Length: 556
Image 1 (cartoon, one colour):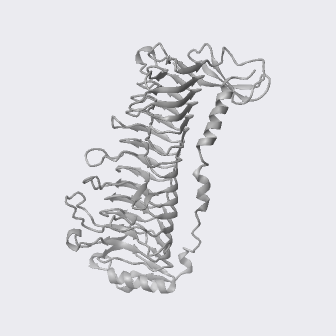
Image 2 (cartoon, rainbow, N blue to C red):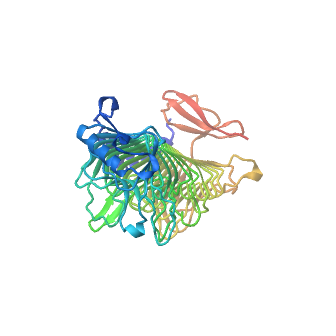
Image 3 (cartoon, rainbow, N blue to C red):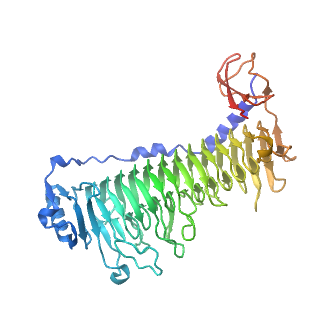
């Protein structure tokens, strides 16, 4: 005897194999290591104070830094910054093959430039154009901006603290920025091609490693990547990014913006607090067509306490709008959508994330807009969001093995789409339906809803989840509802289905089987589920009758 559910799991896997490309992790193998030495014990040290720097916060130390940088460049040496506040009124241009190192946040470069409206030019702390093999380590940079929200814009202080503007592809390459402190830039702390005035094509920056840095009180992004390749942002702290409010749709910011033409990027292990948003992977438009970000991983980050209110309407914690973007293992508390898959997205993987809540009344846990499709939403835990746990309005999506609970609307809403699989999820204690197939303006076609568990485990008077499965009678076709288990919802008709749909029963027994041949993955649901009992059993070792493990304990 073989559980019918196996056939439909096989069907789902066949469908999945046609829909999805391999994980972007394989493409990360292309990221190269930084092979040059950053061991200061092997190098000649050039102390900026020996070149005339005062470090008192009053005397302009620009020339002393320029002299120390030039000598370090000639000797592939170290520019050393002792503790102090170093007033810098000019743009610093590093040499290749140097290390710039301080003694922590006591070594402060205080950039002080004329107001933007008077100078009529963007002003940087450091400007990279042809530099390779440069290490910045263990010092602080402050842009001095304090007038973030003037209209029209009057940017005081440094616009960017570090700006990459390579003169040719890979002219800026192999850059390490480690244990540095960034604050007070009017725009992004670290940026490349941050202006629409820079015409395409933009040349590539290659192999940048940003690790264990601290970003706080930044006007726009902590790190703004345009045309970066093979680069990482890891183990950093971002606090109060996006101090600038949006003006005419522009402004505000996030921890890391992976934008136009960036490829093979990892953003991992970072903490983002009190910022307008966390991260995005973007596609930009040009006269030559779309320029997507590709092969980007956002993993194991924490995003919490996002800003809200007028001027900070950034509609996501993480935005996916490129090709082959993976969002994995993050913890997100967002004001608006926790994860947004946008119209230019293709082949997105969203798996193993914890979404702990959204605050805006329209904010879903995971929202998938109409896009190029081929998206996998798997193994996420979503709870306490103000709208749907998962909102699907894109074709070619598989939603599997997610736990969605305590959402203010449906556990999942499928609307205006084709070719969606919703399988082996748990939807519980939501305020709408567990699963809703409800078109808005177009038809819904070719949807498989199979092997899901949908219930409300609270006492009678406290239950809010309506039907287990609701399917609209209008503008829907070829919807298959197979082997789902729904109970304890507030509407007695647990599954609403009409003649356009085929609904098949699941196999139910009062105990694991004692006869028959079974395979790993076979599922039997409990025909008499009670409190302190289990929803069912899954076969974990093939045989006759095999070995079975209970799942879904029902608690009072």
